Length: 399
Image (cartoon, rainbow, N blue to C red; front, side, top):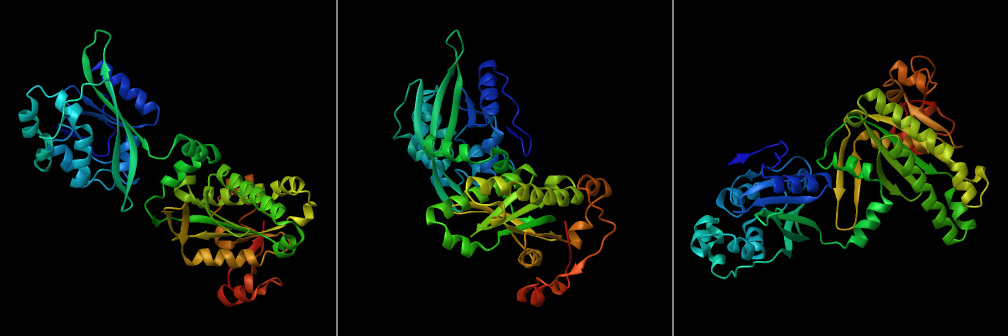
């Protein structure tokens, strides 16, 4: 037996199995391979990462029988996937006919090979000698059971030698649904979201932006026109955040929230720079949003608030209805207060954010982080009542 821990599964030695493993790996599939005796030969990192709850690679017992004691016990330790005995029984029932057909000693040998909690299933199996088989696969994710569609494909070389079986899985959602999600979304950002699947404290720059005077605009435009405007605005905002290397947060009304993690950017300075770059890019994109909405540029004005969170608690929240990145911490509320004071389309950045900038990043932004003056939020003529109450001593400057 070979447990590979956090290492990528080694490619199988058999050339047919190896070729299939490479194809599944390069295609980003949920896939695994067993040899002609149903010993675990390979599991893709994508499948193991999902089984690991998106926070690590699930351990696999390579070389062990696919439904033997060691393999099933390994699954029981996974964060997600078929990690209960009941789900192991479902897997055995779905694939048992193929396994029995490949077991030279028939039922008696298979009964002795499988995990003890699966032995009673063996007597109900019928051998299945087919070139391919589709089956339903069930697993756990975030405490809930979910379904996937599985395909078992028998692998032979040019001479007809049977080498093993490839198991490929996909979520039970149709390809139409999956294609729509992948087509509309940014795949790089989806990967970036997985980096915060496990909530943790993460230093980050915070960006808040909100449409100014949105209520009069909503009353003046037809509902359909205002909806189209909002959609164009959030699409432009998300594009600017993603291009700058950030994580899109929640969309609340006409507002946009984004986070730029130091661990993703490479340094605190790089994260602060990305935050400022995204704000500037979004401001530049507003003229096109206005033009496409048949509005004058001065009618689309955003307020921007930028701040630094040293101990933000950042993570991904996934429910039955949506998946988003969120953060908790005093600095999040403070950023909202800064943004509310930035009337007239100003972009106000806190001193905490600005002083994260190293000289080279500040120079690239045409800013001087070491010199310049700040104003206390509570002293601004545009300070809101909440800003004076909650965050009057935060120092800010225009960028």
